[in-house]
Image 1 (cartoon, one colour):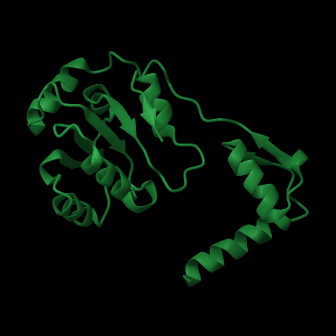
Image 2 (cartoon, rainbow, N blue to C red; image 1 turned 135 degrees about the horizontal axis):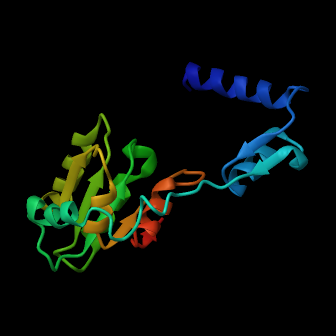
Length: 181
């Protein structure tokens, strides 16, 4: 319904219909398939180049000193399972579902740390409160370096509604953190 989004979609369609278009680089096969389906682009014009991750930067032993401080700083017991959500734009990344899932877990010590920013963060704090997990949901805002947060968690959770290729999953896996997405 947004005039801005209608304009952007029209511009996208015009771009992909241009006879000057020689190639489109896609960061996933899903994106390539969507371009074929939505715009009828010839598959021969599409190149899939997956995103990479710097495994020297993202590794299991990165910033161990900072990692060790996170749980105590947030009051999280050492034995508690910790799920990490990383992303801004909480609605599209579906933080609400992660909070709802936490409320359903039988392990009542399980914690959720959300790294990222959203102008409606208070809505998610309120949701956590209504679901009875307000004290176990930690919205820590945007962080300069996410690596210690990967180290402080037991699993990444990213129930995103739409994400062509979530770099956060690559970063988490390179850091030794399993992901659920």
